[in-house]
Length: 156
Image 1 (cartoon, helix red, strand yellow):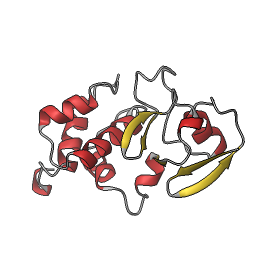
Image 2 (cartoon, one colour):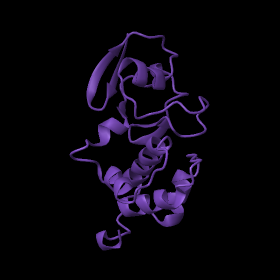
Image 3 (cartoon, one colour):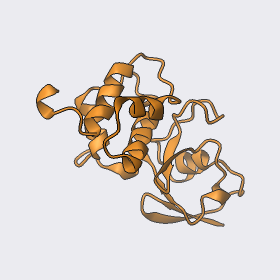
């Protein structure tokens, strides 16, 4: 049994210690924000925050997550009260198919936790390894810049 703290709640997980965190989040805890993409930690669709740092949940075994604070997309905000990053992505309509959105939002949140007012270059670097095949990159960048406070409401 491994105890995980996910979105502020403790969960006792009965799974092999080397089980990927993504599988526990989606299958056991029914949290569908993180997506299965490549299974290699390269595309970013499975990104979660672990102790405030962006992490690829498809390659992280749950045994390394015990006692750490895990936050998924569902833990950021709600439909009624979205996190500022989620709100910025909504305002900028920063999605087409939406598959990459979890990784983009979680990577942006991690960046803002460590650097509240990043430059555009820092945003681009933080999102560099999150893949989007739809071509929503301009809207995604605008959303991240809005979340960082660089775009005023009147611009949107």
